[in-house]
Image 1 (tube, helix red, strand yellow):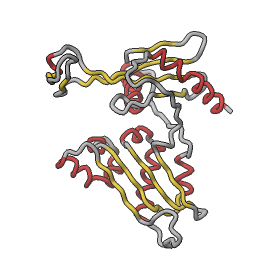
Image 2: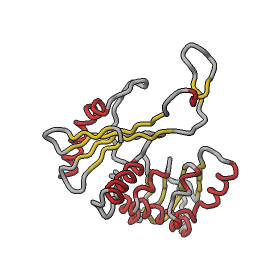
Image 3: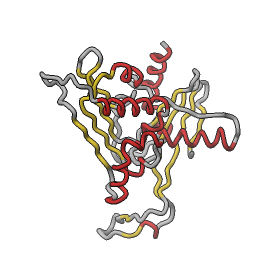
Image 4: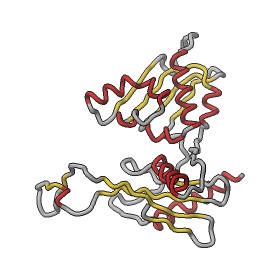
Length: 254
């Protein structure tokens, strides 16, 4: 954690947390040459920084976390707080997070009748970090990842084309069981969400309608535009999202 600042006269804290990429066999290109040189000849480490902001005006507190593909994610922040609050300061018995979704996970579980198809993308090493009951569904892909060492594994299964005029009356029982188990895991242990790069589920709901659940796109998001090469401070990030964050908190309270 390299920034923790309590904003005066508000119940908000702005923070940033960094992931140091030490021990990597990285190369860098100096500005004045086209030759690559080992990064370890320089001093320091590459740091991926994620800014996040906490509003503790209500219970439980609400966090707005910057999405950083290569840097710390919500699961890392939760892990950090869990270790500080539980293991070091002995001030908390547990630390948990829940992700705000446009389509709540419990509603999808309730409405799911028959899986049409699903598409999953994840990094092989993330499979090893999952609970055993989830690993059971994708263990073979984990073994493939260990042998071939791809950057990502994409799993797509199609049982029926959504929108088809003729729909099968047979239930895809195994797929329904898997989808329900994964969704339930996301609901009970949200840090599993960070193990996936993509998760899209297309299904027929109990009203017989085609429906889609997208784990990534379903998250509540605040979008701002910045210059690609800009390096904003935690304060500058907060100033860009403050209005939308406050508006979300007002809607959440209502």
